[in-house]
Amino acid sequence: MAHLLGRRRDSPRLGEGPPPGATRTALVTGASRGLGLLIARELAARGWRVMLCARYQDELRWAERRLAADGASVASCACDITAPHAPQQLMDAVHEHFGPLEMLVNNAGTIQVGPFDALGEQDFRTAMETMLFAPLRLIAAALPDLRTAPSGSVVNITSIGGRIPAPHLLPYVTAKFAATGLSQGLRAELAAAGVSVTTVIPGLMRTGSHTAARFHGQAAAEYSWFAAAASLPLLSMDAERAARAIVRAAERRRPELVLTPAAVIGSRVQALAPATATRLLTLAARLLPGPGPDRDVPGADAARTASLPSWTTALADRAGHRFGEPPVHH
Image (cartoon, rainbow, N blue to C red; front, top):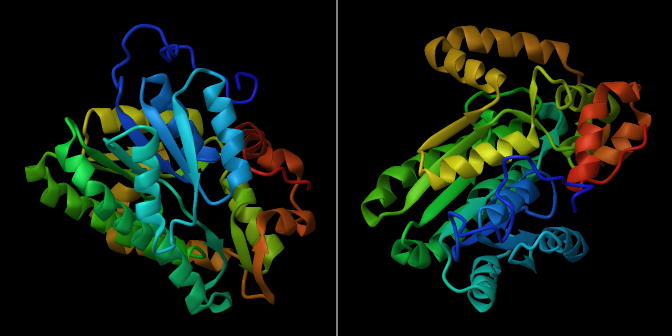
């Protein structure tokens, strides 16, 4: 795994002394690639036993092999987290392999990019099922373990899209606004039971996620702006740094973590000057592509028809190659 994921210089080496999370168990959803895989790796480096969850078995095996090659205590369970039986299936897998759960990381997500006129109700339902109702059901299933754990915790990976209603991302924004509210409310309600809830609000990160997004309307044009933004150093963040910060925040039981300077500035503007934020978002919407005929185009397909120089997405493409996202050929 070293040549693909690497190991940060200050990471504890697996097996060197008693790590901080020794014998503790974490479950990470969306863990076969991208940020979820990096969070799982960071937890394993700190001594946590990690159950990986994602939809596709072959991708999970790829991730599990690479974490296990570095000595991680890791197992995986392939399932669709939106399925009604998924929470019990995952908890059974955790108990079978490791025992009681101490940390749940809700990371799985989906992104649909395009103007409102090109989207349908099902796009919103898919986003809400994946990023609100599935985490809600999984938290409910995990709570019996978390309440009795020495330091039970939930980490909800939301988004700056859960604070700022970015145009052309409305299904994602709607679900993330709801997930942020749920997470913050649970923090207050579960504190008396000793369960910590950390709400993570990332801005754009370089994980290669532009290849996994779905595009609507003028798919090629929508891909172009989204992929370029996800690669720009001033707007996006190195995902390995983000994973380290997330795990530190979870272990310290912090209530909230906002990642990337752009996300910090944007959330403050939204909170302190909402009218100004709305005017800026209106301007941004006018600059984005108009409606078009395309429906639900995968990122890899949209990239092939996009007139976007490969250098504009080089950083995100390299990150995707390292962190398990499928390659894009421009």
